[in-house]
Image 1 (cartoon, rainbow, N blue to C red):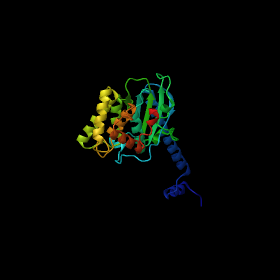
Image 2: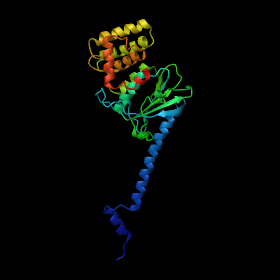
Image 3: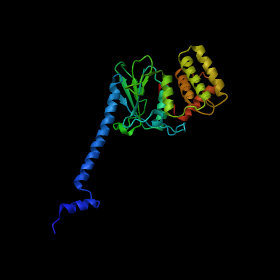
Image 4: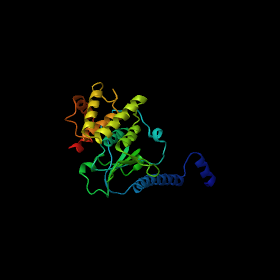
Length: 289
């Protein structure tokens, strides 16, 4: 008996898939996958084009220390809103004469929480950058070409700027200026902010002391902050009590950068040692030599 078209239709209805249709579906899936990768790559190029030119791509990301001190859960979609198909990019312009130590610590903490694609660039306004600054975000990631595999982009551009600047959405967001303000933004991405208003205010006060007195003040201002730190750390292990916080990160980094470690009071020295023991500050010590 002759095999008819109706027989073919009956076979297809019985669950058999036409090989040509299956091949077409596979080709379509491959095209869609490549389009997705292309979109992620274009997003990356757009980020670089809309930021001041960076002439040297020095490195990419970045496993941090083995265990984070922050145990809370954070979800980028809930913190920043959903943005399907695009990597959330943080772009920071910093002067190599003043490396933002606290941001390096926060970068290491973010790498423990998220898949972070990190890169270091050198702007044409800077003639030379010491090697430690080129590798400050860690070794190159084996999957750095595939942006869609990451949750967060972290780009540091060494540039001749008077004030550190950060853009989160390079297309629409006004820059955030100042290391302390950028540190606050990055810390919020960890979902570890104090829920108690009094503790949050106290945290901001310590950060302001670090910026305006330790960093920008004179010798009397620095001595006054060290006395305040010593008094607070005589009552508790960390500046907000029993919990390590952004206040500890920023204040410790500014104390270290000010070269006050050896002359610091005993409680401050013990606290700095505790910070060091956490492992999160390993990335800053090459810049203190």
